[in-house]
Amino acid sequence: MAIVAAALMAIQAIRTPVRNSGATGELQAPPDVQAALRRACYQCHSQETNWPWYVQFAPLSWFVHGRVSAARRRLDFSAWRDYLYDPGTAARKLGAIDQMMHSGAMPPWYYRLLSARARITPAERAAIETWAIEGRAAALKAEPQ
Amino acid sequence: MPCRKNLLSILVVAAIAGPPAFCRTAGASEPTVARVTFNGGHFEPAKLTVPANQPFQVRVTNTDRTAIEFESFDLHRERVVRPGETITVYMAPAAPGHYSFCDDFDHSVAEGAIEAR
Image 1: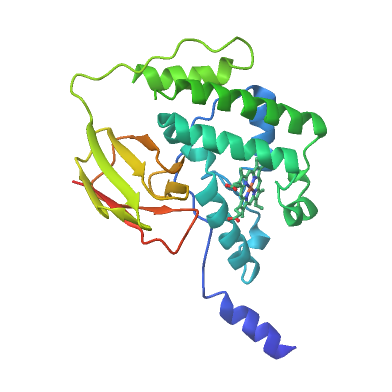
Image 2 (image 1 turned 135 degrees about the vertical axis):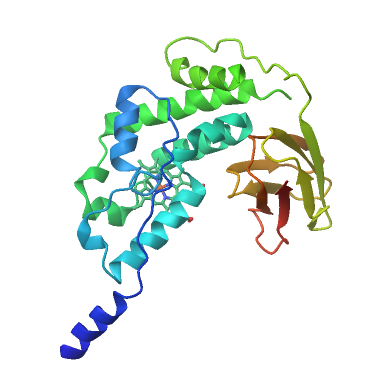
């Protein structure tokens, strides 16, 4: 028991806090979509994360840090304005969001278990999907090729 | 950048109205176009140089037999390029530095780099 406690204390020295760059991305979406994305997705897919204190401790902090890094690489709502600069990229991100909403793979199951924030209603899911489908079509039209 | 704003507004109003006309006016000076070809399982050239702090474009041609995903995590770009296709990737002004890109469909492909200076 003492060994476990000591080990847990020792690993706290390895700090891997989730840091935010300060970017906001200026996501443009209808208010219901915006609110649902902020609540259920931004903890991983943005630079506006705000994790509770108890996940700042290793080894949970390592796990969270790893998930957030992977999530941001794939989709970072704080980079939204930058995505829109290249309509083809915006279309791809919106297509992926549509897919994830459709399959129900996002938010991840472990996060749905852990946090009430991640539970999205069928209406919210449908609104996000509609926004993504229509946004993708608009982005593809905007692609001057 | 009137056009970018326009796309922002398209994405907002798309749900309400039909798609408005989109414009992409050329600036006073034409942006730099860097070209890269994917063939034989690698990017050629592997390093592109572009001017820093100016918008630029990367024209990616895939002469290979399988689709690639031109992806730059650093520059937030993700585009599929089918065999025989050439696409244009629009890049926002980048600070001086080194930005990598890869084929996100096949991570054994050597990464390429864009140097803005």
